[in-house]
Length: 185
Image 1 (cartoon, rainbow, N blue to C red):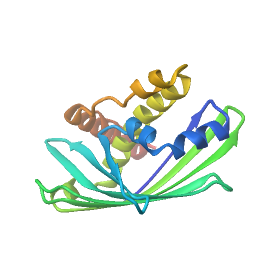
Image 2 (image 1 turned 30 degrees about the horizontal axis):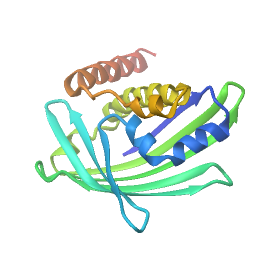
Image 3 (image 1 turned 45 degrees about the horizontal axis):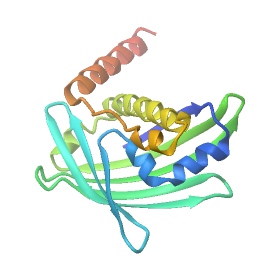
C-alpha cells in the first residue's frame, strides 16, 4: 500500500535536514519505534510496535538509510518480523525537504507491504488515516526537539505511546466520515 504525507516545519531547511540525519532522534519521535543498535555496515536495528485495533504487532528488523545531501532527499528500506504474531512487514520510504515561505516542507512517500495477520488491517484508507495521526504526533515531537534549548532537554523529548484502540477507532471514524462526504458530493 502507498502512503503519502506532507507537513511543514517552521524552521530553515538545513536545520530540518540535520535533524533527519540524526537517526536516533528521528526514532525517538516515531510513535512505537525503538532503535536497538547500529551494525558495522551502517544499517540500524530496531523494533516498531504497531497497535492496530485489537491486535498488537512488534516488528523486529533492520533499516538502511541512504541520504542525498545535495538534494535533501533520502531513501529508507526496512523489513521486520513480528515473531509472536507471525506477521512480516517491508517498507520503502522516500522523503524530501524543500524550502517553503513558512519554513521547510517535508514530503514522505512510503510503500508498505504487510503479510500475515497484520495484513488484515492493510486497508489503504484506514492505514492512511492512522498514518496522518502518527505523522501529527511525529511533527509535534520534532518541533519540541528543535525548540529545546539544551541537548539534555532535546534528548528527553520522546514520542508518546500509541494508544491502539483509540487510534484505530478515531482513524476509522475519520475514514468513514470522509467516505460519506465523498459519496454526498
